[in-house]
Image (tube, rainbow, N blue to C red):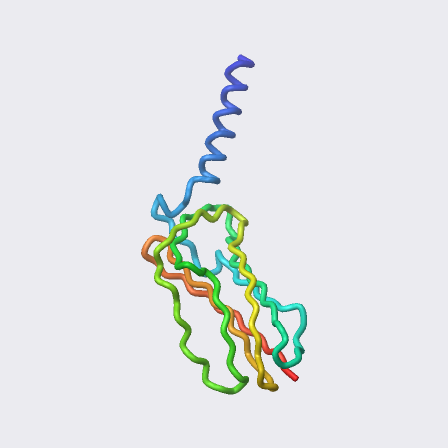
Length: 147
């Protein structure tokens, strides 16, 4: 009887691990927009002109499911515009690569920009992925001052 109980526990653990690590979209599951979160930050909000401005960003899978995610050469891109000015269109790399994204895991990016003209700027951080045939786009923005 003990042997059957041990085997049963092992089978349950194996089944749980298989569900956890088997990509959900292979079964047709597509996440909701809220299942992922884009976080973007910079160490400071005021910089001197021509100073390196480091932008850190993470696109996090907030679910317990894993996914095969399709994306371009860059998942996360950074752009900026003078505050109040029209934002220029960003070029999204062609979706040609796939990556595994486990439960609670993130795609991370660190980019450095330089701005030469003083003023107030809005920094835009975009993440573009596709899961199955569903495009998922996330954007965060924040303002910085360049003196």
